[in-house]
Image 1 (cartoon, rainbow, N blue to C red):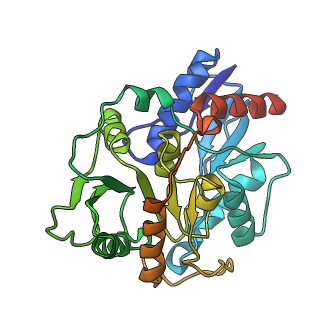
Image 2 (cartoon, rainbow, N blue to C red):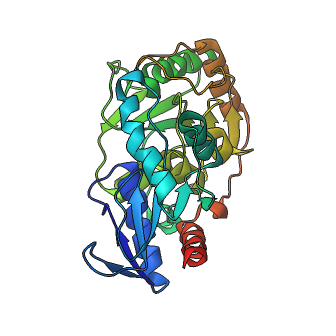
Amino acid sequence: MRLSLARMPKGNRGIDRFLSLLITKLKEQGVEIVDTDKRSDIHLAVISGSKKKGSRNVVRIDGVYYDTARLGNNKTIKNTIQSFEGVVYQSAWSKKFATGMLGVSNPKSAVIWNGTDPSIYRKADPYKHDFDKAFVCCAHWRPNKRLAATIEAFRRTRKQLDRNLGLFIVGEPDCKVPNDPAIKAFGSVKKRSELASIYRASNYLVHICHLDACPNSVVEALVCGLPVLSNNIGGTPELVGSDGIILPLDQPFNFKPVSSIDRVVPIDLDILADGMKSMVARDWVVDRPDLDISRSAQQYMRFFGELL
């Protein structure tokens, strides 16, 4: 099978980390990756794109725009979903989200979660620290990711439990990080091995983004054996399942546009802090072979095969 990609991985954001791993695993299964100007059996686009003549065109959908200023960008995504031969949604929520906002679907679609490579985490040496237990949060931070709320709830939790707890922040913060020895901000982490080291040193992931389809940080944490503290909408609860605690922080999404994606939807910090305390109180065993990138690649291969 010959595969061309409209976008090649070019950075360290979640989509780039995933595509890099997917390409590696597809090559191991005999797929030939070719340039877009070369003949290919399958052409894979991300979110939207132009059809490639002579190929079966597949688009990978994360989410769609739901803030009023950018709703016009959904036209291209809608046309892509309708015209391409196949659609891969990152999660069942992603499919529900796109269908609810755009009012269209593609009869040939599949839900395939993102995956990661467990060997990356097995090989990593944990980042050294002196905390009894450590939370980690990881994102391309903006207000809807709720870093400020995570920090405040953590400080309440540490004080109320009177425990030597730590909080690791990965990604450039979008808010002021207190000068607190219990909080370590790593900034933008470029090397996958460094990110794995931070996960290995952590005990719990906090991910309470208002809407996320299939966050790679959650996939990576679960594969590393970390339970996840999550909010109750988006694709995160679907990924977490019983391997964490899902908090009632948000009202159900009604598939209507909002004024701005960066608006800070208020949440109850007491609920979040209580969730953190519950995470610390429980003993967790997390084993998620279903999020192995090899399995994701196999699912992509099967779906591509159905289109040929």
